[in-house]
Image (cartoon, rainbow, N blue to C red; front, side):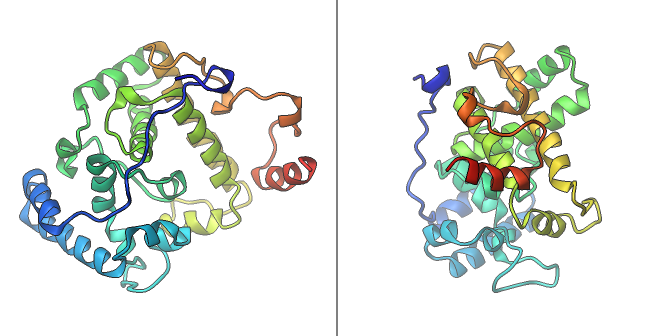
Length: 273
């Protein structure tokens, strides 16, 4: 189905946000997580998360720092709560049960093991053979092998978790543009530096006034590479464009480029009036 400006409209509808029964999740963990210690850790994280958030919808409605596990009750010595440790269960809910996760949450966390068999990816329905073919194709299109793989892992993993669908071939142009908008909005958050500082406790995050600009350049670059790939293999019909932005008229383009994200949010708010 096509939307405004010829952008494909996703047919994804996220399912009811409810926990799965412990026996059902335990059966999946035993099948797809090979090591017993990892199984015990998964199930312990599941039980504590469900106990703390018996209504899953309330977790989705909580403030982002709480959902990320950066603040709240049950804080452990590592500075993380049970929401943070429940990452494996939340991935399962999305990929196996169709309960999509929002982009803000996905941009606030690290997800690098959806394409790693050791992380239970075989039980999530991800086509790893197709993914490797896509990495090879993006490399043919001029991206270095490492950058192609890392960029696709970052973008495709989050797009699947957002959609609640492990089918790589179902990703649409609308998904790409929605993700681009979410990246720009996340970079403009007032607490952007705080969230990134907590996420990267090993000093990887450079906490300064240009942090969000670097974030936008890096992450929009990865998304653009994904768009280039999907356009070249014929999965999306809309040509890639810088920033993965939808086509706008003059009234939607009120500021010169580039413009610092925090300034953009304030100025556009008032110019739009």
